[in-house]
Amino acid sequence: MSELSVNDLHLDYGSGANANQILKGVSMDLQRGEVVALLGPSGSGKTTLLRAVAGLESPKSGEIKIGDRTMFDGNRKLEIPAEERNLGLVFQSYALWPHKTVFDNVGYGLKLRKMNSSEIDERVKAVLNQLGLGHLGDRFPHQLSGGQQQRVAIARALVYNPPVILLDEPLSNLDAKLREEARAFLRELIVRLGLSALMVTHDQSEAMAISDRILLLNNGKIEQQGSPQSMYETPDTLFTAEFMGSNNRLSARILQREGERALLQIAGGNVQATLRGQPGTNNDATAIIRVEQINISDTAVNNAIRLPLSTCMYLGDRWECVFRDTTENGTYGTVLRAYAKQRLAPGQYWLQFPQDALWAYQAH
Image (cartoon, rainbow, N blue to C red):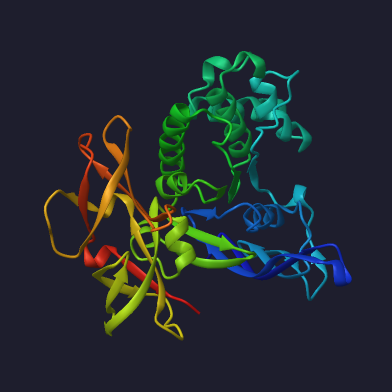
């Protein structure tokens, strides 16, 4: 049985002719012990979906079930309030009480549930120790680092032993270095405790690192879902391909095709590519290749185009090189980015595209 099930969920802001459709028939399941990331750009509906599951937004139609309990059913006009859904919530801002200690912040919800003090004490101490916060129970939020505050917010969500934990951009308030450490801690914690978690993020690296499955939302609908590896390596649509990873986007013309293979004309050169997505109505296409997939050569190689080097930027473990050509009137034409192990000297280079890594999506 799914820990969480959402079926054909619709949600609008406003009403009548002025209604703004946010969710347009979203369906998903969360299995026991699974971590699902809701990924997508701003306005795609991911946070609204999480809030609807939590009971903080009222859908227009559809169904939400947690285990075998129905929390929302549009047909039956049934809507269980948020406080009765028994879900663990970790907000983007952490939402800690500034005048309460760590211990009291974590135990506050248990007090509201009229639990006896000895059981509250036992539960709070247990969850604080699980998260490495046992020695900080008497401190106040302003005496904690950002990473410690985040763990307190997680402890407060876990202390109920909820069937599902909901995470709304849980790492966004941390700086870049701490975010990398926190996502490893969060993934290890979720696996160790066997949690079922639904997490909202706009960071595709974070989604891939933490989740077992990604749901990519686009304009209120699920564009594609699958394991992080399948989403990155085999995107079904141009939107998915562009959203996942660091990419080069190129205008292309399909000259020949045979099954999934195609000969493309790009920047005056002809290269072999792999067709992806739905067939189009003409031979115009958009080609996508990940920055890390391009091979740079100073001599002619197969399946490559030649471009002049514009600049190189040092990234620590590699150089990011930008190649540009110019049109007859002096404006920029094709622009490509690729990684190199060392800084390149000025000049012309051959940029080689592995056929399986150069994807062509036809225009519709």
